[in-house]
Length: 91
Image 1 (cartoon, one colour):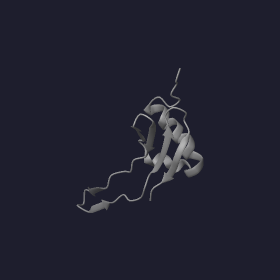
Image 2: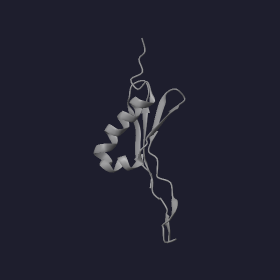
Image 3: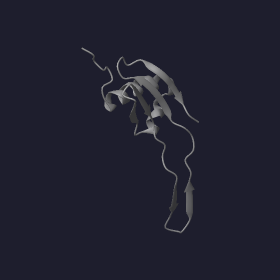
C-alpha cells in the first residue's frame, strides 16, 4: 500500500516551517500566511506571502506610502516520501 507522507497542504506547511526556522530564523513568520500548491500530484511547493504596499492618510491629511519589497521563503517537497527537493529565499 502506497502512503503519501505529505498528504495535504497543512502537513506541507508544517514541514516547511520546521525546515525554514533554523535556516532563516523567526523572521519567516513575517511571510505568513504560507501557501502550499501541489504540482502534478507529486511535489508540494510551499511559499510565504509578502505584505501588500499601501497608502495611509492621517487625520492631518499627511500621506504615507508604504512599499513592500523583498522576497519570501520557498520549499519543494516530494509528496510521497517527504524529501526536500529545494529550499531558497527570493530577494
